Amino acid sequence: MNLSVGITTSASLKKVDWLTSLAEETKLYRIWIGEDIDSLHDIFTLTSIFLLRTSLTKVGIGITSPLIRNITTIGRATAGLMELDSEERFTLGLGIGGLQDLAKKGLVAEKPLQILRDANYLLRKIWLGEKVTYSGRFTLDGYSTRYKFKIPIYFGARGPKLLELAGMIADGVIISGPRSYIEKATGLVKKGLERSNDPRRSFNIVVWLPTVLIEDSRGMAMAREVVSVIVSDTPKKVLEISGIDEQRTQKVRDAVSRFGVKKASELVTGDLIKDFSIFGNAQEIYEDFHSLEKFGVDEVVFGPPYGLDWKSSILNVSKAWG
Image (cartoon, rainbow, N blue to C red; front, side, top):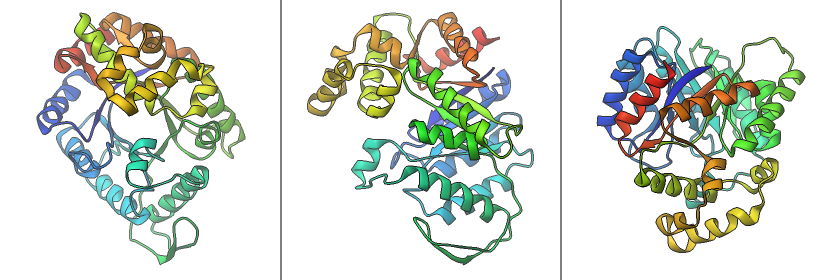
């Protein structure tokens, strides 16, 4: 199992600069850059910085959504990233996007299965320089480029049908959700792998859960706030798959909506923190991560928010990993 570190487009450039140095020194497997829609930095610009400032560590976008960008824009931007990357370290993560972020932009994710299936198909055609004509959610009329790239596509998926689709047509999957959901989610991915045309192909299962290194009560308060945000954005279908009683989460959801995250965090119980995050000291986080290996997980992602002192939290978990 490999250890990677996650960061989002809301991170400061100071944090980005420090993490690029750490990645090379500690031989982290990968840096994943998550997109906080309409946040501080552009996802493709930030990814290019990581590719230019590292030479050994893999770099992945995890994820961007074809609902907020034209499909040809994604195709051209990612092809540009590949041109920066002679070692072929880059991976593109595609997903629908956070429900609350999409709602703020007035977007509704209708037919998410078709969206990702079409995006996967069209991007692979674009990267091969083929002439593409297509109508549907995405419309192209004789679009062509001069590219000759093969870029791995991972799906950020949570619903059962999307998880199975990832196993069928993607190169990997990024899973997030309650711990009890991970085993069932990986099982759905494997079902898709069995149904694919090439079950022997390389495939990577990534788990990215909110992680908090806790040293005192302030760290636990941070974990409660993080979990209140995660609970409020977790689809009901994921809760059903997890076997989590919706009544346990509904009060937190309502409080986030009415009073904000800080007040809602007072309702987050210890069992909810355990369900929705990885937390504890460095050794406990290490053991929790490794417990996922039995489900076929190949790669785990640490952070954010990491801990109250994000630098020492990343260093300590990296050291525990060995």
